[in-house]
Length: 476
Ligand code: PLZ
Image (cartoon, rainbow, N blue to C red):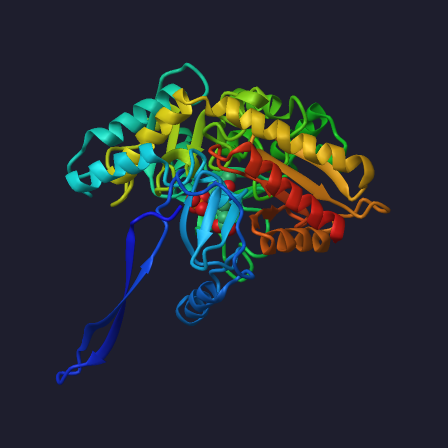
């Protein structure tokens, strides 16, 4: 199980020299054996200590002392390796991964193809800045995105570093193309933490509270949340369109942005027909329809993109997370005429489309296209649905099981009133983590447990992880 990789942790100790400048010495090296990551890690749940164990706690103490309090963490461990379906911590605990670092390591953590591509590229060159000296990897990623994203119209792409940056740039190109300013986002939306994307994001705590003022010309309209609003897709669309027409004006709107399956907001799948109706209204009014597929993209939902499942062809798609197997990369892909509307030099950034991240993306995209991952996501979704559907028969606290493929969630409610039960949700997640299963929560009301396992997870681990969550629910 444990590889030969030697991790040398070096403590740098700082002092002041005679001129008062800081100097750094490295007086001690603490060699610790860390397991090699990737799918060769033993695929089992192992608890050697309570979580956190002593070594993890040591790191968490250093975190508390060194890192801004605003940067939280969900799982109290010091991760040292990951792969297949597990994350291993510094105390030798092996946790089942049902979160993929928020839908990022979809191809698997430290996937061998990604690792090999990164190693080769990092030894070749690490950076030129694509805006200074272009290179093939960036072009190749964009060619692949133009081919893989929904629709067979002519497309172009551009690369960035994070989902939020992709969203910002999608809004930029939509405004430039339309010459208009207003943007519509939806209830329950999550689009990022930068200033513009905080404005697009719905939930105040923890994302926005105290961080304003936010950008102007952002309007929010109701989404489709069938479990809670009881509306058909057509009814929910008319409600949203009515507000757009009466309160904003179709001719004022540059873009409508929506996650086809809303992620942080609660894995909300809109009612049938909702998205196609909104997209058609956008077309009729010259509004750019942007699908934010940062969380739902790349085989995650059992399709290459969730837009396909929901019957829409977006004008612009934003992607990130799963695109590069864990390296930071993001993209916008859209109709060529929209993407080309910006003047030369209007889009870019120092690191956008970094060559190492692009090499990783080429390997990951190849896996999404050729390694049966779409089918694997469907199988995973079926297993999750089956496990919770069975439990739901005897547990009315399970209000709804929803999602697609390996993007599934369970909404917990008070059976008497149907009110969201955030306390139960938090208790279940906490208990599962203590038992060595990484699960995440989400939802506007904080009452949704979500499942985003890496598609490299083995069935026995998935089933065991779900069993632990169900046991935590039974005990809660
Ligand atoms: N759009 C749909 O899901 C990121 C955020 C976690 P970045 N979601 C996870 C957190 O608490 O910060 C996300 C998303 C959708 C945009 C983003 C933003 O992507 O890469 O985090 O900027």
